[in-house]
Amino acid sequence: MTVRPMVNRDSQFFWDGTQVGELRIQVCNACGAKRFPPGPACQSCEAYDRGFEVASGEGTVFSYVVHRHPPVPGKELPIVIALVDLDEGVRMVGEVVGAGASDGDIAICDRLRVDYNRVDDDLTLPVWRKA
Amino acid sequence: MSGPSGGLSGRAAIVGIGATEFSKASGRSELQLSVEAVRAAVADAGLSMAEVDGLTTFTMDTSSEIAVARELGLSELRFFSRINYGGGAACATVQQAAMAVATGVADVVVAYRGFNERSESRFGQFSVAAATQVNTNGLDNAWSYPFGLGTPAATVAMQARRYMHEYGATSADFGAVAVADRRHAATNPAAFFHGKPITIEDHQASRMIADPLHLLDCCQESDGAQALVVVSAERARDLPQKPAYVAAAAQGSGRDQFVMTSYYRDDIGIPEMGVVGRELWRQSGLTPADMPMAILYDHFTPYVLMQLEELGFCGRGEAPGFVADGAIEVGGRLPLNTHGGQLGEAYIHGMNGIAEGVRQIRGTSVNPVAAAADSHVLVTAGTGVPTSGLILSA
Image 1 (cartoon, rainbow over the protein chains, first blue to last red):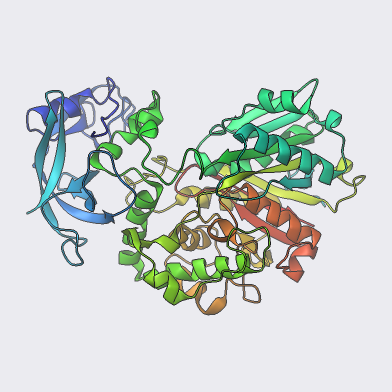
Image 2 (tube, rainbow over the protein chains, first blue to last red):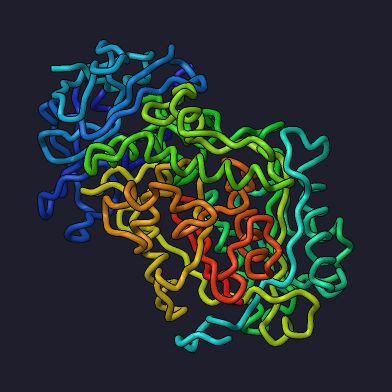
């Protein structure tokens, strides 16, 4: 079973976005600062007034892990998990699928593009593929 | 002794240490383990149980202060507290105790940690519970666990890979820590890996867990408990054991701090340990050059290198050179983890490392560093999390 994310008022917009194929990044309506992970108070201007923009869905590998042991619920190992620097300037964790997990299959600075893994009617996870 | 800050420095001391055996299957409850360790520590201090009026532990500990107090037959507790963030709590429990005795809030405070971390709930496994906590920690974990990133090893491997990329560090550089720990454990009868040293070739040949981390980069999972007795410096002078004075005790959290996943800073790494280090040096008036050795939290080897940099023993990216050629083994420039660390002795969430610091100050370590008994030992707590540190002084 896939581990489901805890969701609250501050993060609901992100998961609503993945359901409709959008990778949403929080943007402060007052000062324009982008932020991931999201939160209720702008770290730049202290405003509580926030919206979002839809990311282009492209990014660059900042770091990555090939997870081999121990088991991960809902996953067939090994899996590749990356820190992705989005072109919009924020960073997020994501699974890299379809690239293989052998030496040389993935590297820091590789370009990635987002895709979506529909787990069930209530949850869609963003995943990443080599661009 | 008394430090320069006019605050906490030199006003409290660790005067008793006690532990259970360290194993993979204790055969008794976590509560019993903690009670046994507290009894042993209070006896070591030369105190009676009736004098204990404070208890402190980790938020993660499954045995509450009142449950421990009941088993010990304590009549009144005047101080009890818990510290959050996993192994980052270790040295902070001593800070809590030191602040309590230094201010007279309590007279005898025991810090304890006990668990069946191998035979019951294993911390090395993927923790669905961590991802479903109904609090901000659970919400934070929504940005990693559902994507498959949820074991301690994997979260550290993400940092390690970037560190290798930035500074040219290699897996063998991380392995130097494992080799040192296991060499020290080999001569420690209390260590699970007593009599079992490893070579760098063993490290390199061990299976991959979460690339770039090999099995031998990862600490053990252990059953056991450790307790530490803290009293005021004045009281300590009247007790049988040589006091390990608390020259400094600090906590630290950095900007944009998360638990194991502080990945959203421009430079990732562990700046929270820099917060701890700067405060330790400020409180004590000491510098890295004054430390003949250190106990650096070693749940995973890469963070030992990064701690050396954050604490000021070497510059950023210089730790691979610093740890080379046996420099961190007994006889080297800065021996680390002389009990064998959590890779070699046992993983008791950093509390067993504090006990080793006390033994070095007393001169009773199985791997003594002679200068430590006349000077200082630096001890740190969990890395990748909000954390803590101590400087113990003779």
